[in-house]
Structure formats: C-alpha cells, structure tokens
Length: 162
Length: 266
Image 1 (cartoon, each protein chain N blue to C red):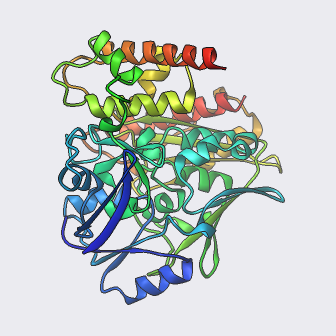
Image 2: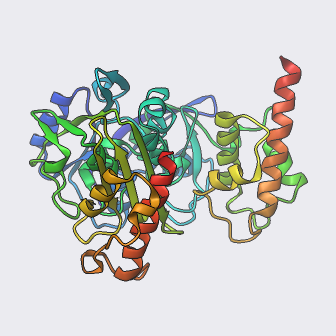
C-alpha cells in the first residue's frame, strides 16, 4: 500500500491506496470526483483527461503514486464560484455535447490546448489536437466549433486585460 | 492490473539498486506503453521503478556538435525545444506527432527506445542521425542498439540516461500513421549529414523493426531530390503484413514517405 497525497482542485487529498491504483480511480473512488470518466480503459479515448501540474494527461495511464505531490485539476475544478469556465460555456452554447460521456475529457483537452497554443485556434489545429479524444455522438463538428469560439473569447479576454 | 510495488527512484544509482533488488522489476519511464500492457495483464512486474523524478535524466542541452536529450525528457518537451527545432527540425516534428497531446506529455524518449516497438517513431531518427545512446555504464551507437522487434542491446537492468544526436545539415520525418493507434504503418526519417552523406531509416514497416535503406541513401547522395527515389526497390518480402496493411502496401508506403521526407528537407 502507498500513502498518496496530492492537491486536487486546490485541496489536499491524502489516501492510502494499493500501489497499482490508477490516478483516475484515486480521483473517482478516493476523492469522490466522478466527473472524470473511464471510457476505453486502453489509453485511447481521452474521457479520463485531467491536468497534472498544468499538463493534460490520461489519468487511466498514470498511477496515483506517480502523481503524488502533484497539482491535479479535474473538470470539477474549472468553474469558479458557480460561473462556468469559458470552454464549458462554449460547449453548452454550441451544443458540443450530446450524451456527455466524453465531455469532461474533451473540455480538459481543450483548456490544455488553449493554454499551450493561445487563441484564436483554427479548425485544423483543433482537430489535430483532439487526436487523443474520441466522441461517439456528435461527429466532432460542434465540439470543434465550441473550442474555436472559446479560444477566440479567451484570447480576447487576455488582450482586453493587458 | 495485477498487484505491483511502486518505487520512486531518486537517482540512477538508486533505480539500479531497486531494480536489482526486485523479484521481477520493470523501469517505468513515461508508462504510456507499460501501464496499458499491465492493465491488459500482458505484463505483471512485481515492482515498477519510476525514473521520471531523477533530475539527471531530464533536459535538453546543446553540445559541441549536436543535442543531448535526457532519457526522461517527454515527447512534448522535445517537440517544443528551441534547440531541437533549430538543429534538428525533423526530430522536433517527429516528437510532435507521436501518439496524441496527452501521451506526449508523459511518454519519454528513453522509454520509447528501450521498448523498441517496431512501429515507434524515435528509432528511425536515432538510426538515421547516427545518435549515441548513453546508459548508466556505457555508450552504444545506434547501429548496435536496435536488435529486432522489441529487442535492444541493453543488458538486463541497464538504464538509458541520455541520447546524443549529432547536428545534421537537414532532417525530416514523414509517417503514415495508423488512423486508430497513431503508430507508424511506415515512417521514414531522412538526414543529410555534415560530410555530405545521406541516411534513410524506416520504422513501422520492417519485419525486424527499424532499418536503413542503403539503396535510397546512395540514390539521394547522388541527387538529393524526391525523384531520385523513383525506381528504387523496397523489398516486400522484408515488410510486415497484418490486418492494417499488406507487405506490398507497406513497401509502397515506404517510398511515398521517403519522398515526402526528402521534399520536407527543403
């Protein structure tokens, strides 16, 4: 067993877990944060994407013990004070979700790509950056539209703030 | 996943000691292959020794005539490195198209090379550029490192510490990725070296893993242009054949990817 402590959405979480515990299990079963989903369980679908020390990773392909000492952000940590994150708001506005299963991973991947690349992002870039996320409902079109809109809005906000 | 014991190594020496003390230990670099394999119960190491917190194994530095990349450096770090982009743009582009963004944030160059997947991208760059693989105990030239599918010259427990690439006059990589896995069905790295020589290494297609194509190298040394590859045969008998593509299809892809890589060298 391993004593694992990490910061999740700004709060310290400590659990004693089996060494083989995946980060996604730690988050869902240990921290009770079930917004992060397990889709394929074979490291392909991206439903489990969270940010570890500011970088998007597949939490089904990382041991909780590997993330000990790290800062983890999940979908539950994006909104601030009841106000949706711009990417969350854009997914609602542009109908970027249907069944919703892939949505947490899509949104965490989208926030990561906007953080890395800035905005506004073009369609080709967004589609290439979504290679690690699979959706079986929407055919991606509205997801791409939502990310494009959010990246433009966030770039505008940044410019306005400067 | 079967039970295992996790170790976070503090140094290369610490990792070697922990590995030697384990009943059936495995080194955990980025984990993007090892962990999925463990989840499928195709691997069941008694212990996993995490190398990614060892400071000595990280980072990218310009050396006298090239680039030294620490073994625990991630694909995203290589892809984004200003040093790599300037000296070896083909290597930066290769790293930026491994797997997907999330995999690139975890996967490492040392892990990829130690695993030597026949469809992995890095082996082609290492072989084409004539890189040297540094381990805890010795240095291995690329020519001696790769030893067939999933096989390398590494001894039991030997740990890769860094990879040293010589600078090239031009370098480029072109791959045809499997649409589902993003692994190369054929990937070709072309390097023009300072001495005027050209080296061509192919991954994803060969039955024995990565290989150099000397016919292409000679043709390109005489005329560094895509059309110089017209009529250069790629032997289908030496290609992989599986549900994703026949040997003949892969042989054809190798030439197409080689031409694209030459064109991308500019």
